[in-house]
Image (cartoon, rainbow, N blue to C red; front, side, top):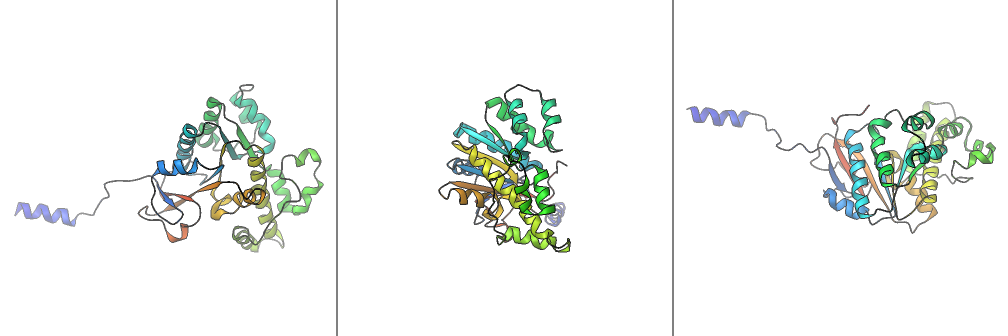
Length: 284
């Protein structure tokens, strides 16, 4: 009877997974793929766009691992950052070459609030290995100018300011699904602001693509919010428009309840999709 009771308890107990993976990598079609296979594949390209979830702890850890592992294959590596605005390039360079201390970087560059936890390890790796690190984003004051006054307002900037944005006039295709979705989100805003919101976003994508190309070497690994490169749009669209022959690979990050398989909605969003549990620790 005691044996029967033990068997009953085992059968009645909830099934607990033996393994708790923190992430799983899938191909565009939803096929699981090993991390090292992804690294070998992406290292063959000119540009890697890593679309992150800004507050996701696993994403930030993986960004550092991807950087280290690509570096072992392609040491002529350039790192690019949405998280630094183009007019902060001189401050970032001065920190990387040892001219200034970290306190100067933190005080004089417009670093994000989560810099120390999430992006400092990448910058420190670049400093240690003497890799270029590119401040690729449009200064936020100019993106906001577009949102408030329209894309034409950039033409009023002095030449000194225009050096920190993509060359004008910028080609903006508001029929791209990502921008169309953004315009629909702005429907409750004052007339015209939905379109300006999308155009403001496009100035970020265009400017990041511009500075990626301007600083291109053997391979560039660029870190940006997932929205800026998902569905092969955003930065990817501008890069391809500038040079259709570029070999570009995209990595996209998503969160799901289960990692067993990739949800249909997340398929075809990138060449490689990093799937992370929804309850993963957030960095802020």
